[in-house]
Length: 146
Ligand SMILES: [Mg+2]
Image (cartoon, rainbow, N blue to C red):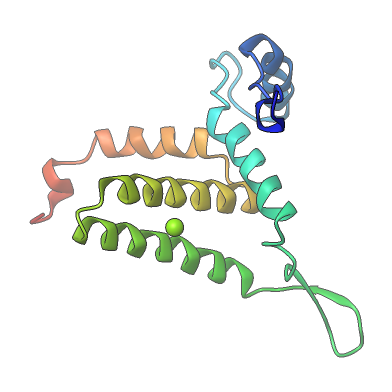
């Protein structure tokens, strides 16, 4: 059997549950509230680990003139610019009427957003639900023209 067919199956829900349970335990949510889902959190962590392993965070810490490591405060802005790049690539695919490329670029947007959130400690399972709850109360077109 060729190497590419080596069993690298996705973990089962039963195998993931202990991991999810640990993450739930680390979160803060109201007593009696149902535990929030961890789908985006787990996916984001995997994406972020992959991005790190591919060198996308090699400039996270820079050397000061005295040789000490210091956080690269421009890196979050760089990451946001790269999300924007993927949005622009999606627009190009749309203009080219290339549905396959459009789908790939939308996936790139999601990957970069989940990477950013995982890196910045933003729990998107919770934040998306909070924002959707807010959006559900907003008026038609959120009170705007379009
Ligand atoms: Mg892309």
